[in-house]
Length: 357
Image (cartoon, rainbow, N blue to C red; front, side, top):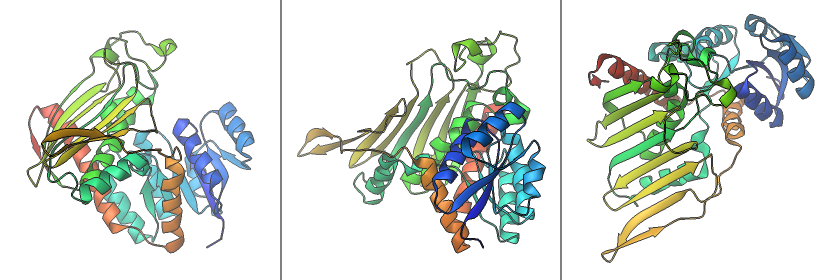
């Protein structure tokens, strides 16, 4: 294997540029090819990052024998076919979340990666935040005692991305707020809790604001209330774990509520509790601990300064696995479990019934 790994990036939206910036900063990778459907955008990005090869079709990058890695940041529905083709061609794959639209596809992708001795990883970068890492340490140390209930939410007031684009197409995205924001929320929560297994899911979802033409991320992106909004802008789920504990999830792209991107985790333990509050992607002093000392309530906040280089950190781990030739089997099982949980949320919301995993 070359000391410098050659990367091809497919998809030039916000996520694609984030991937490119992270790979460009890594000392052992070089982005030499990009693919996208918009000619002007393709030329602009190639010039900005000094990329020598461009293509309109992702198949051209998959077939390129110069490449060691394919980085995928396309509409969700394309993650599966591009990943499968890239793995079959012997390339390692770093894919934007969600890895796939279904848990079956997720499992198949890892099976093909194993068969071809390739590394496959997904961009779950929020768990690299210092507050999430500290939350995990507090749980595993026993500081909280048994965590019997938790709450996790990601709420936006006007945050529907790409109105009228693939984001709001059920076929292209596979879902709305849940499949867009849910992977980060569920991953960070289960990571902090020590990977408990979800036993049952009971969920609801709504698309009221989107169908009414409200809630776009940018005011000039508001659409007319045509009823063509095909996905949910809110989903809520009660997760019951095998150990008897529980969690309430709430995810909204849009709601008539607080005007911010408000990400929150609350872990309620017998000995103490903690809350992580990330308003507008805050990175400083976001964690608070609640406990009782000598019968008196005590609240304190450890100093927190989270890195803003989450994608660089997850790509560093990915490159380490590529150079070592080792796929983390524990990570594979966790990613598949997360996909199964997300799938169960949609199944429960659709059927109106609790779903057993």
